[in-house]
Amino acid sequence: MQISVKGKVAMVTGARRGLGLAVATGLVEAGAKLVAVASSPDCLELRQAVKKLGGEMLYLRADLADRRQRKGLVAKAVKRFGRLDILVNGAGIQHRQSAMEFDLAKWDQIVSLMLTGVFELSQQAARVMEKQGGGKIINIASLASFQGGWTVSAYAAAKHGVAGLTKALANEWAAKNIHVNAIAPGYFDTEMCAAIKADPVREPKIRDRIPAGRWGKPEELVGPLLFLASDASNYVDGHVLVVDGGWMGR
Image (cartoon, rainbow, N blue to C red; front, side, top):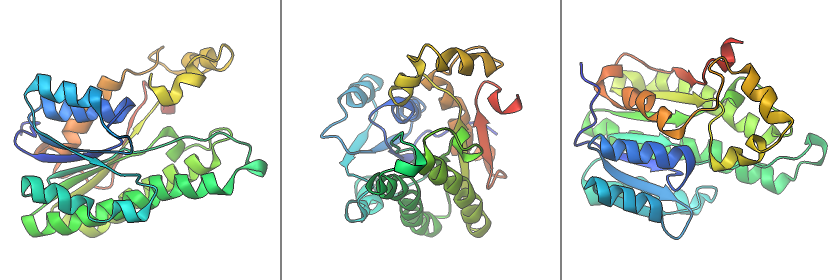
């Protein structure tokens, strides 16, 4: 069976930068129609990439930490393209602070965006996918879905939740031909990780533990995602696929 998404309609949240930008561009390059969601006024870099590739894109501006702004997003995608085949829940933010001092407003924002928001958009998408006969939901998890990290208690809690939610939704929806899985990226060279990558003490320690000996490139997430987004993975449900250069094996 071919790994193909040609002609499919894919929604990607957090599509403006980093891994979200890479997978959104990769889906368009593979022939999908794109619904990009981000909180910024525009996605100029993504728009330029889509135009260069000759693709189609609908941009929806929304702060996904705000429940009011999450409402009806999938319906807008369906109104434009008539269906939704793939949902990639990739929006995320980071806040580093000791657990004793952690700002509860930041906690609420992170959990709302990265866990509750993932559930709500998955729920919206699944209702559409059930009516049309199936679909794919891919959640972006993290190494923090398995580990606690350091000074990232809200992020780790949310990402642990994403791993559990992925399995819970798969249990309910696999028989409906709605396949829910997740990808857990390791250390990738993105804007979110810029501070750690620039840290002369932490960066060498991280790189030394990665068997591949380097950080990942955002475009290296596209292949695994296309597999999970295509019919080639129709018997894969509730799986968290680690893409980490071997980090978790150490």
